Structures are given as structure tokens and as C-alpha cells.
Length: 315
Image (cartoon, rainbow, N blue to C red; front, side, top):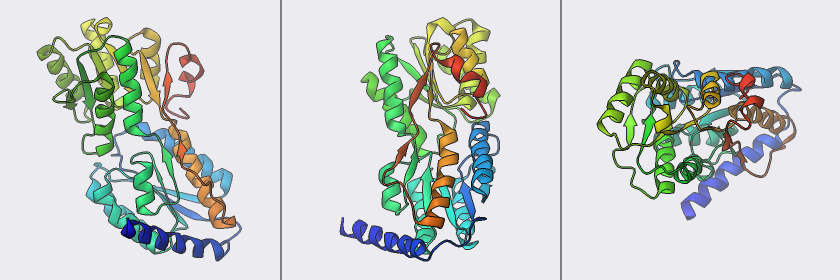
């Protein structure tokens, strides 16, 4: 506790010094956004839209950087490189606390304001000394999905994890299992991100586990091949199917009754708000006093019409 308090105070002092130094310029600040997403993950397009819009609205520059293959050691190096370029702020996910804490803490100790987003927890963000966290509590979101599934009668499930190297993905599956009151066990599938692999691995699991009656997909990369699989096999009615996040295909699957609901973490907020917050912090020393929960919310047949046209761009 003493060590944590000391590191927090040191980080706070460094950030206070940045704020007291006054604005670097009237506008034109440069921020770096570092994600853990591989180039193939289209879900991040909404965040990229948010960054572009915030860049124009706030008259700043935002550089999006990521490890092309999703390698977290590569991500750690990207954070180090970002800090070495002396930006006015860094926005980063906490895809793996143990792997990333060193580079993030080093950036903060250097006096660079940091906001964490998306992956990771508010507690981890505080341990790092970041200003705040904008995101969805992943375990809670999975637990919420599990409560819906339990109410629908799910007893055996499959959690299709297309990015199992990210600990936050396991939290989603674990929360779902805990809400059902069952062990996660072998009900989490390491599907990989290739659509054909997701399709074939999910098909094999469901064939080998015919008592499965619930499916949790962790995003479009795992949901969309599964949608195709259930339509091809004509077995959609057998499963209570919930997916994280939104895409045009997921929205259509909700309308078609293939997916019961989608968990919306509002990624646009995860891109837009940190840029606004860092801009205000650099210019005026202003920062919200609390973390920002961008989700979870559930999109169902009842409200999908209000968001489907925006899926993949703003939702």
C-alpha cells in the first residue's frame, strides 16, 4: 500500500507540474493513441472515426499506433517509442497490465499525461498513475450477458474468444460463467481471428458438445463467422446468442433473431473523450474527477433500429 501510494503521489506531482506550466500552445497539441488491436480487427474503425473527429474539433493531431499482429510485446515498444517522441499526451489500452505497466509508468514519470481506455480496469489505471480510464468494466459486462443468458435458460455455453492473449477477453468469459453459476472450464474456445478458423473451430465445438445452448462471442471477429455458421446449419433457434460490440452484420442478426442481444461499449466515446480531456488538461489544467464508464449497454430488437445505421462508424 505504501509503495502504491508513493508511486501515485509521484505521478500526480509530475502531472501537476505539467498543468502548472501552462498551455504549450493555443492549439496544435499532439497526442498518441496506442491500441492492442491487430490491423485485421475492424472493430477499431469506430474509434478511428472518433479520433479523426476529435482531432478536427479540438484542432490537435492524434497519431494512431498499434502492433500489426496484435503482439503485446510489440505494443509495449510502441508505447516506449511514443513517450520518446514527447507528445502532449498518450492514450493507451491496458491489454496486459504486467506487460505494459513498465512503459506506461515510465511515460507518466517523464511528465506525459496518460489516459487509459478500453481494456483494463479502473483499478489498474489508478495503479499506473493515469489520469483516468474510459471504458467498459469487462467482467461486469460479461456478468450482465450471463444474467440474460441464465434468464433465457442457458446451462451449457461456448465463449468464442478471438483474442485470448488479452486478459480482458478472459474476464468477459469468466463473468458470463459466474453469472450462470458454472465453471468456465473448457467452455472458452481459442478461435483465433481468421474467419475460416472461427467458423470451423466453432462448428467442431458445437458438434462435439451437443448440449450447448448458449453462445457468447467477444466481438465482430468471432460473431460474424458464427452468424454464418448458424444460418448455414439452420440451428440459430437452438442457441441464446449474445455478442459483444456492434457491426452491420451483428445488427442484422439481431433483427433476424439469430443474436439475442449485443453488448455496446460505445467505442466512439473511448476515442473521442480522451482527446477532449487531454486537450483541456494541456490548455487549462482541467480533468474530470472520475473514471468514465462507456458501457455496458444492450442492443436488442427493441432498440436496434436506432443504432444499426451507425454501426461500424459511430456505434
